[in-house]
Length: 396
Image 1: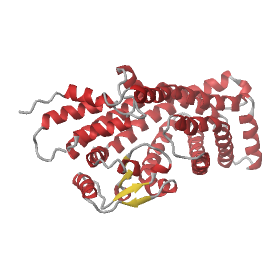
Image 2 (image 1 turned 180 degrees about the horizontal axis):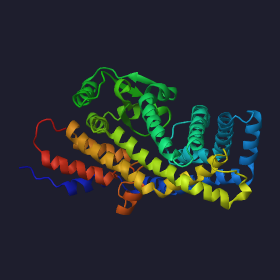
Image 3 (image 1 turned 90 degrees about the horizontal axis):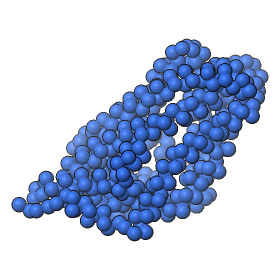
Image 4 (image 1 turned 135 degrees about the horizontal axis):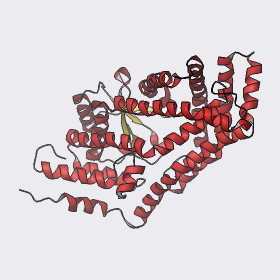
C-alpha cells in the first residue's frame, strides 16, 4: 500500500503560497470583511438622508400630483426616482469598491470607461426592475396591510426562479460573449461529467471574462431548457485539464444536487422573515420620526424606511447567509471530487482561488465571512479523498 499523509500533502500545497503573495491575498479578503459593514453603512446612510432631508416626501408629493393620485403609478414614479437618486449618490463608493480596489490588488483588467459602461448597463436594467418590484410590494401592502409580507414573499420566490432560468439567456450575454468550446478531449470529458449527472446540455461554452477580471470561474447555470455549462477563458488558459475538470465537477454538483432549489427556498424563507421584520419595524420608525413626513406604511416614502430595515436585517444575518451558501459549496466540492476524480487538480485550482481568498482563516472567520469553504478546507478534503482512492483507475 502506498503511504500518503493528507495533512502533510495539504501543508505542502499551502506552503507554495507564502510571503508577499499570501499577505496580499489575506489583506484583500480581510478588507472584504469591512466592506460588508461599509456597504451597509453607505446604503443605509443614503436612504436615511433621503428621508431626513425631506426628499422622500417631496418626491411622493410630486409623483402623486403628476399621476393624478393614481397610487400604483405614483408608487412606480416614486420608486424610479428613489432608486435612480440613491444609486447615483452611491456611485463614488461603487467606483472605489468595484474598480479602484480591484486594480489596487491586481484583480481587474478593465479601464474606467469599460467599467462605467457595464455599470451603466446594469443601472439601465436594474432601475425599472427594482422600481417594478417596489411597486408590487407596495400594492401588496395596500391590498393586505397585515399579511402582505407573506404574499410578497411568495412572489419573490417566483421572481428569483425566473431570473435564474432566464438570466443565462437574456441578461448575461449583454455583458459577455459566450462561444462554443472547440472539440477536444477536455471538452468531451466535461460533457461526460455533465451529461452523466443529468445536465441537459450538448455543448460547453467559453465566456470572455478576461476582459473584466483575472479570476477563474465556471458555472452550470439555468433551469431545464436554459441550462448551460460555461467556463471562463481565464480558467481555460490555465491549461490544467485536471483542475478544469475538478471545477466543472463541482459546478455539475450544484445542478445534480438541486442547490438552485435549495437556495431559492432558503433565501426565500429569509426574505419572508425580512419582510415580516419590515412589517413590524417600519410603522414604529415612521411614528418615531415625524420629520420624515411619511404618512404611513402605504405611503411610497415607507419604501425608503423599509430599505433601511431590510439592509440592516441582512447585515445581521451575514453569518447565516454565508453559511447557507457555504454548505452547498461544500457539498459540491465532495460531488466534484467523485465526478472528476482529480484531487490534485482541485488543490491547484484552490491555490489559484487563494490569490483573492484567504487560504487559512480562523474557524470564526470561516463561519462568519466565508461563503465558500476556505482554501485549507478544500485542499485538505481533496487530499483525504486522494488518500482513500490511491491506486484506483481514473484518478487524475
